[in-house]
Structures are given as C-alpha cells and as structure tokens.
Length: 196
Image (tube, rainbow, N blue to C red; front, side, top):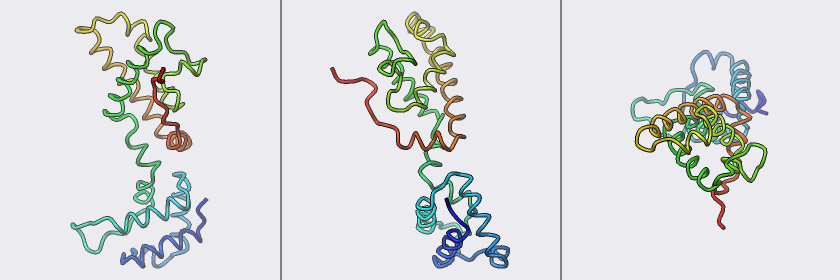
C-alpha cells in the first residue's frame, strides 16, 4: 500500500527530475500526496510499480513541450504492467489470437470437447480469466457443436465474428477488475496444446 509519505517521496522524485509541480500542488504538498496515494491505491498500484512509473515518466521523451507536464495519478498508474495489460484485453488482436487458440484447442480436445469442470479440458489451462472469457464466447455462439457443423465458407466467418465480439466484451469487463488483471499478469504460459 502506498502511504502519503511514499507519495511525498514520489512527488519529490518528479521535482528532482526537473518537472515543475503546479501551484496547487506546491501550495498544499501534503494534500496532494494523500490524493496521489489514494488514487494509486485505488488502481491497485504497488509502491515498486509507482516508483518504476515515475522513473518511466521522467525517462520518456516529450519533444512537444518543455518542461514536460506534471503527471496526474492516472498518468502514473497507466505506466504499470497491470494497466498496460488491461489496455490490451478485449482488443482486436487479443480476440483474434484467442479465436485461433480456441479453434486449435477444440481440435486438440477432439470429440469430448472442452469442459469447465475438468481442468485438463479447459480452453486455456494456464489463465483462468482467459479460459472464462473463451467459455463465455463459446456459449454465446452455440458452443462446440455450432463450431463443428458451421459451413467453413459461409457460416464460419459470421460465427468467428460473433465469438470474437463476445470474447472482447468478457475481456473488457475483466480489465475493469484490478484483482483479475493481477492474476493474469502471473498466469502460467502453459501451451494450449500439450505435447504428446
């Protein structure tokens, strides 16, 4: 947890890095530190992540303005691994990759198909949240049976689009849960298809 004392240190580093704090911060540094601490804690940012975010912010070139603008708490929180991951969840590339993985996983699981109750037959055995989003998308499109009987040329593109949309919605909802994003950051990178 980031305390106001920690936040004072973070703000001091920004100032030592050459940034000029706005007058409203300078005139009430203690209140500003409390606000920064509260906001960063609300985003689930650890002290180490906040320190790294301050260094990252100071190190980023900003050729458009000099001196570089003072960062609000959101600009610091956005530079953490969790925020960067959350920004990608539900994106087109995330959904496209998940759709490809879903198809591979279904082929690998064969006629038995996927099962939420059997970890060996999860859609993503290494990431419980991605697994959940893939099952939500599968249910929204009729499950394995719909995928298996879809006409490849006419129906599969529509099925794929509906699947990716449902998956994206589930992932965007997960992105708003800081605890879920933390789990995803440390999720196993086990392959979806185990070697035989």
